[in-house]
Image (cartoon, rainbow, N blue to C red; front, side, top):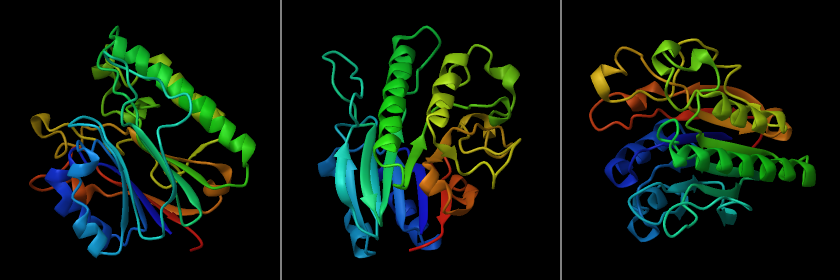
Amino acid sequence: MRIATWNVNSVRSRIGRVEAFVQRRDIDVLTLQETKARDDQWPTMGLEALGYEVATFGHDQWNGVAVVSRVGIEDVERGFPGMPTYGEPAGAEARAMGATCGGVRVWSLYVPNGRKVGDPHLEYKLRWLAALRDTAAAWLSETPDRPVALTGDWNIAPLDEDVFDITRFTKSTHVTPPERAAFHAVVEAGYVDVVRPFQPGPDVFTYWDYYRQRFERNRGMRIDFVLGSPALAARVTGADIDREERAGAGASDHAPVVVELDGA
C-alpha cells in the first residue's frame, strides 16, 4: 500500500496536479490539507473517474482537509474528540479528518499555523496539539494493534536541521520550544516518524516559500510528517518526499510525502 500526504494549497487550483500525481506515483491513499474549499465546491469527478473515493471536510476558503482512497473509505470522522475551537464565535475548524482505508486508520491533519510568537493563534495551536496528543494516545491504548497514520502539515520543524538556517528563525513560530515539545509529546505517546529513517537530514525539506526562489535554492522547512502507530511503523518499507510536485508552474509550496507499506 502506498500512502501520501500533501498540503495542496487550494485543491480547486491544483486538482489537475492531484489527479496526475496519484496516477504517476500509483497512490492508494492520499490525504490533503489546506484544500480551501467547502464540501460542495470540491472537484471530485476526475478522481472518481480514476477509481478513487473522496471524503472532504471544508467550511469556507480557509483550511480544509480530505482523504482520497482507492482501497475504501469507512468510518469517516470530522474532527477528533476534544479538538479545540477558535474564532468569534468559536467553532471547530476544518483541520482534522479520519477514515479507515484498506484497514489503516488514516488521519489528515492541518495543525494551526500559530502566526507569530505572542499571538493568540499560537496558544490555540498548542491547545490543539495537546488535545491531539491525548486523543491519539487513547487510540493506542484502546486498540494497540491497529495501524494508525497521523499525516499532514504539522507546521512544526522539530529539529534544527529541519529548517535551512536556524539562525533565521530565532523569533519565529514553528521552531519554538513549546511547539517542538508539543510535537515530541505525540511521538512520546507512541507514534513514530516513519519518514526520517529513509529521508535523514540535513537539507531535506517538504515546504519552500514562494519568496525569493526558496525552492530553487533549497531554503525550506520540513513540516509535513507521517507519524505511525507501532503497528503501522512495522509495515513501512520506504518513504520519500516528491520534490517533482513542488517544481513548475502552479505548484503548491509543499511537496507530497509518500510512504510505502508492505501488505495490501
